[in-house]
Every structure is written in structure tokens, then in C-alpha cells.
Image (cartoon, rainbow, N blue to C red; front, side, top):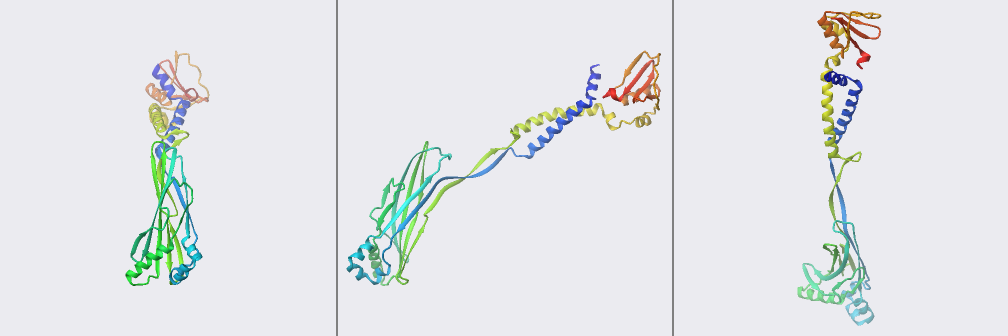
Length: 341
């Protein structure tokens, strides 16, 4: 009896429809979850610090005066004063970014060191042309120092005398080294920036060129950030596992249904079964009650009814209500499509 009830449940169209819908949905979600990567990797550019050095210089005299009018410069105190008081103003600006993996900032210290070089052809000599070479905790303060062009010219004259040649072009370069120590909550970081200023003297062209480099820079890094992909707000891996566990039992139930109803699924035409089992099908207007039948049995499938008819060697009667009847051994076997549904 329990087997008959189970078979009737699995023969229900509404039951199999629900199973099919849930199975299709779970398979769609499962395929999407397998087609989608559980994680995606994004690259983010994280800035730690930006630096900029603004340099202002005032050159009062053309460089040719250092070559051709030396006596005039020396004899004229006002002009000589201008040469000696030519200044360079350097102002460091920086921005230290918060919100990085290094944590919050607890303190910042800024120091600088200036070194000057004079370049004549292949000759490079260190010279001291600044009154202050080092400083600490300068922050955004402007660094002001003079450039002693007379000292530069003196060195050039010495070198040219030793080489017995007149040197038409020479370069004086100031290398400024800014050291910014940033103290974080649990660590510290040292950032070094090295801007430079070059003064190129040319007596032939009667020009003084000023070139700068490394005035602005930044320290940054590209970090790979792993982001979790989600479908409808659910984690891909969890969704993949849950839909897999759901689709397996639903598939088993569907296979059970197909197994129990395989004969009915292939074809449901009584003419086919009539030819297959050799049982005639007679359409009647009405089936009169037979008093000789003591029992009426409802058959669950049309295939079963044809098998009974073949065993009893009895024809199948079909009434206008689309009910199939077989009589034999004082028993009425009946199958109605509406009752089976």
C-alpha cells in the first residue's frame, strides 16, 4: 500500500513540476557560481608621500662680468656686493598620506643636507659655497643661502691656470638631500628626495643657464587587493556548495520519477499500446454497471491497464469521459486520466 501511495505521489504532475523548477534554478545558480571566480584581484595605487621643492633664485649680473669685467666688479663695491649676495631660496612641500597599511602618523621630522660641486669638463671638485649646509626640522620653512660666485670663479681660474687653457663653460651644481622621517604607530619610514640646481656659465654665449631636476616626486606602490565576489549577496563558494547539495537530491528524485513513469513518458497514446500489447480498444458512449463485478480497482497508469487487459484477454472500453475499463474475474479495472492526475 505504501508503494502504491509513493508511486501516486511520484506520478503527480504538480510534484514533478516543483522538483523540476527547483532543480533548474539550482543548476542555473550552480553553473553561474562555477563560471564566476570566487575572488577578484584589483590593483590599487597607494600613495605614501608627495614631495615638491620650489626653488627661487635671483641672479643680478650676467656671467660675462665674471670673465671680462673682473676689474670692474672688484673696483665697484656695489656690483661686488650684488655678486656676493646672490641667493637661492628653497621651500620644501610635502604631503604624507594616511589610511595606508602603515597605520596612523604620530610624528614627522624633516632635515636637509646640501652639497655643491663644480664641473669643468671632466674635472669635478666639491666646493663649499653655502653658509649653512645642514638643517633639521625645517618642515615647510624656506631655506635661504647665498651663492659665492667669486669663490666659484676663483676655483675656475686656478683650474684653468693649472691646465693652461681658458675654460669657456663650467657648471656649479647644488645637490639638496631632504630626509623626511615619518613615525607611524608601530613603525617608522624614511623618505629621501634629492632635488638639484645647476648653474651653467658660458662666457662665449654670455649666458647663465639654470637647470633643475628632481623638484617633485612621490612614493607609492601598487597593492593587489583581493575582493570577494558575490551573487545576490551570497558568497560564491557557499552558494556553490549549497546549490550542489540541493541539486543532487533533486536530481535523484527526478530520476526516480522518470524510472517509475518511463513507460508513460515515452508515449501516452492508447493506439500505440493497443498495437504493442495486441489489446483492442473500443470506444463506447457509456459503460453500464456490471452487477457481476464485486470490486472496482483504479489503475495508476494506462500501461498497467493494457497489461491487465492482455493478461485477461479482455478488450478495453473507453467512455466519453476518457476513462478506460477492463472487466475480468468479477473485477473492474479502471483508469481515468483525470483521476490519475
